[in-house]
Amino acid sequence: MKIVLDAMGSDTHPAPDVEGAVQAARAYGVTVILIGDENRIKSELAKHDINGLDLPIVHAPTAIAMTEHVEAVKEKKDASMNVGMRLVKDKQADAFVTAGNTGAAMAAAIVGPHALGRIKGIKRPALTTILPTATGRVLLLDIGANADVKPEYLYQFAVMGAIYAEKGMGIVNPRVALLSNGEEEGKGPMVVRDAFALLKKSRLNFVGNAEGRDIPQGNADVIVCDGYVGNVVIKLTEALAKTLVGFIKDEITKRPLAVVGAALAKPAFDALRVRLDPSEVGGSILLGVEGVVVIGHGRSNANAIKNALRVAKEAVAGNVLDLIRSGLQTN
Image 1 (cartoon, rainbow, N blue to C red):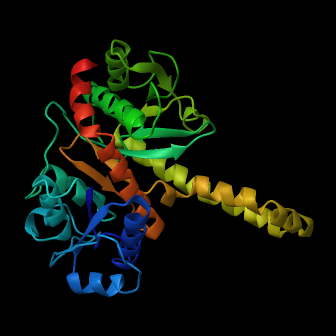
Image 2 (cartoon, rainbow, N blue to C red; image 1 turned 60 degrees about the vertical axis):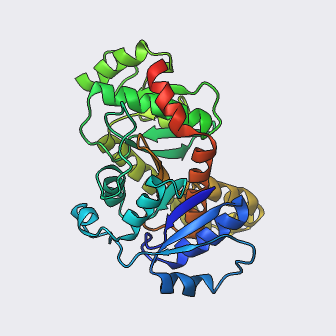
Image 3 (cartoon, rainbow, N blue to C red; image 1 turned 90 degrees about the vertical axis):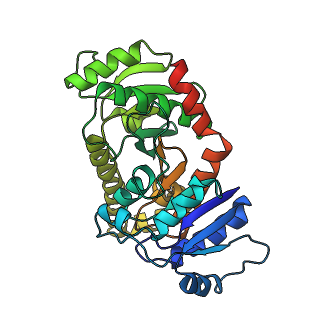
């Protein structure tokens, strides 16, 4: 398997990008094609033991910065994102991963000079994320690709999300819910109510509406919403988790006996940190395009890059694209 990595993606590129690629190549046995400034990439690779690893470099003279608008995708045809998309489109690679500008990455995949385009029948692609819950994990989509949606978009998000949850996350017959302001069928704006009617008639394991509290409780495996709401949810969730961990640390340091207890409970705190660490998720898969595209956070460290590459590997291995194509017809 060959996965393209935009080595100029993260805020502090290319150091964490290259280190994460090395870790992924070693852990998962995949070829990671590093796209970007060849000299800078080689300089970073020289800091690591890459014996036996397949880490080819493809030079891209420019990159799309976090501060640039999506128009830069069309203007910078030789940018690392566009070069990476070209390799996937030309079947020279199986997936594309970046921790760069999210809007630019989506634009490169959908309308860029080497765009992969949408899967036939898909109205709008959806960006996903995986959140920890009291009972496991939940897939939330859309988290930013579509601020304005129609009922059929939400329906297609649900179909794609259910397929990915089963084949990419290993959840059998995933429970699908619509995010709303009440559990009752008539709750929510008209677009949610109309989507409810569509999902009620589908073959999905649709469990109805979910409220915000249902997300961390694990009352559904896939929760569907528009990109505006999803983006607010994900950012609030990440900030809340970080804040709560900070509260715990502050309260422990105020109490000498609690410090001793915290030392004894260190393994439990370490496990909690891993469960709440966004870098363990790695990246968000963009469902609905003709290729596997994973987008990570700009603040990604090496571990996040490694896990983003894992997400891409699992999506390719799970044959998610073909399953989405067939799933649209059967649901």
